[in-house]
Structure formats: C-alpha cells, structure tokens
Image (cartoon, rainbow, N blue to C red; front, side):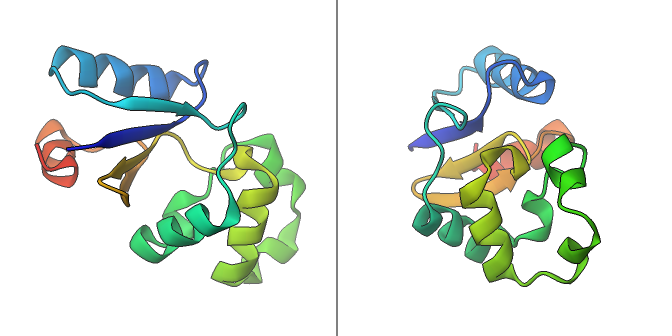
Length: 118
C-alpha cells in the first residue's frame, strides 16, 4: 500500500494525523503543499474521487478572501482555485494507491481505518 499525506508541517490537524499514523505504525509519505503544490490534473483526480466541497479549507484566510462569488462555483472553478492557492485545500488530504480517500482528520479511529484501508 502506498499512502501519501498532503498538507503543511505546522498545521495542527496534520500533526494530529502524523501522530496517529506513527502510533499505529502506518507508513506514509508526507507532501508539503506549500513547497510542492499539487498540479491541476492531480487536484482534478481528487475532486473526482471525493468532491470539491469536502476539500475546501473553509477556516482559512484564503477561503474568506474569495468573497461570496465562491458560493456558486463549479467543481472546475474549485479545481482551478485549489491549483492556484494550495492553502484553499483542507488538510490533511490522504491519497492511497493514487486515489484520494479522505480529507481532514476528525472521524473516529475505526472510520479512519476503514477509509485508509487499514
């Protein structure tokens, strides 16, 4: 199994996820989206797998700066926005064997295990 975790190192939710993964002996590769922002094609595949809405980082400054027009955006507009500013992506985002399977880290441990195929 190949597991990638996309996020930023100083994100509290990412740190929580790393700690959980480490304590459960789950191997993963961390991709810092600030240093290595995902391209539009990769983001498009994530949106196709889990949808644009769950991927929105609605608590960030970048999201608030978009104004109200974002409320009517299509998935294609969100893909372009995510590609333009990776801070709009909710963190962490988990990709298992090339497919986005989960975003955020608030589910119960058994749900996380199921989504990650553990």
